[in-house]
Length: 177
Image 1 (tube, rainbow, N blue to C red):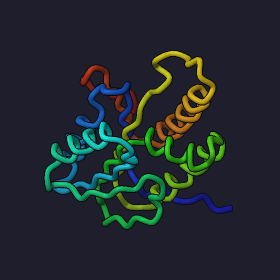
Image 2 (cartoon, rainbow, N blue to C red):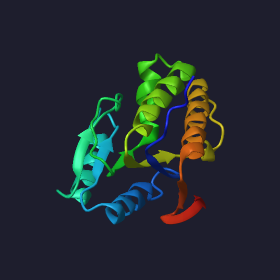
Image 3 (cartoon, rainbow, N blue to C red):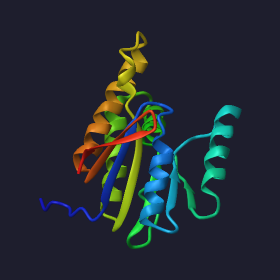
């Protein structure tokens, strides 16, 4: 079987919740493009999430092309050399986890398939994700299963990324590239 050629450039931005990942990733995207694309993966299901999304949109203004895709990104067309910020891989994985009826193995496969379709695009993808395992081991079985799944997905993305940044209290630490 012939190996698929990866056309995309992947930059991964990871860290704890509320560490400044999105702001760093947005600044990075704006350094690479005057008009980047923001690919939002969140499903807005309550007022608090709605408020978070509004803050993100206000911060980005009209400079960005905005796309909302909570599951399927393989159907999105991107321009050649487009800079795309995916925010965030953790919410995207969450969506797949529940789409696949909490079957972590199926969710990992689904996320990987979507990422592999992005790799065929001639674009730069800045992928924001959370280090969900940094907070310790949960006593909740579903949370442990999700943390294991997210860890596997993060390791996969880090392995194909040209650059990886860990954000600690708003400070970026380049750990790959």
